[in-house]
Amino acid sequence: MFRNVDGQVTLYNPDRVAFELRASLAATAEWVVCPEHVVIIHGGRGFNIRVDPTSLPAGAHYAEVQGYDVTRPDRCIIKNTCKY
Image 1 (cartoon, one colour):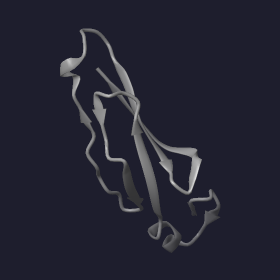
Image 2 (cartoon, rainbow, N blue to C red):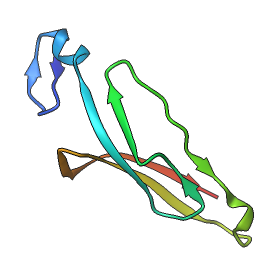
Image 3 (tube, helix red, strand yellow):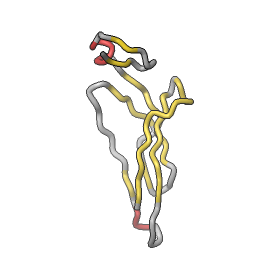
Image 4 (spheres, rainbow, N blue to C red):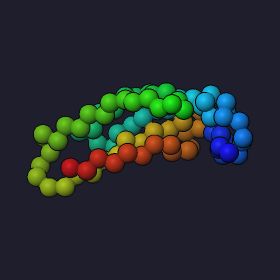
């Protein structure tokens, strides 16, 4: 059994294979750079996130890359943490 994008349980793998989600990304700090938009698919797809800590003062730092479904921006879909 699989869950589709709407959270419904399905027995059909084609629902899972057909999964495609257009996401808008935003970094919470200037020293983290990510693409503005990505397409997330069932089989996976990578994208680059650049972290440039060279201008940061000594000590611990925290930032996130947050992604939102462009058709449902109220639902956070990606939350990746960067700690330096």
